Image 1 (cartoon, one colour):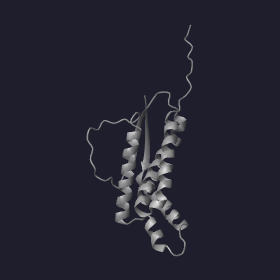
Image 2 (cartoon, rainbow, N blue to C red; image 1 turned 45 degrees about the vertical axis):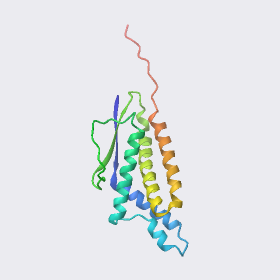
Image 3 (tube, helix red, strand yellow; image 1 turned 90 degrees about the horizontal axis):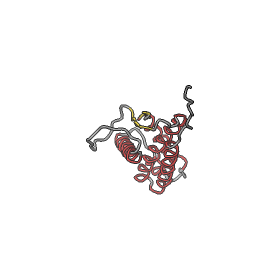
Image 4 (cartoon, rainbow, N blue to C red; image 1 turned 90 degrees about the vertical axis):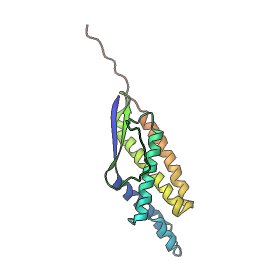
Length: 163
């Protein structure tokens, strides 16, 4: 087995969610919906940050379930304590020896995008429900891309025995 670790920086995930919700809100501005636009845009306020961290935690938990065939883990306990803003998220995978490591960036991107799109889906479910489905659909596509990348293998090489 090959041990593969994907590290995601929470600060980057939070920034990307805030930026995407900001840009989406700004693009929906019609001149008479300022409050609605402002409510769509995630920011640094405690209640916003708490919801983003909860959504990121939910997404990583769902991802681990969906990747259970590849996830390495030794823990035997779980709790519902919200993740903190500090530190990084790590996804440790046990991949077959013939896993094609050339697709690691694709794996990282699919995991990152799944977490982002799932979190934005949850955010818009609360703040602008008519925008949410787009991000749910994107997260489903991210999972398909992730499964495809995880199933890439290298071609076997023939070894010729010494005479």
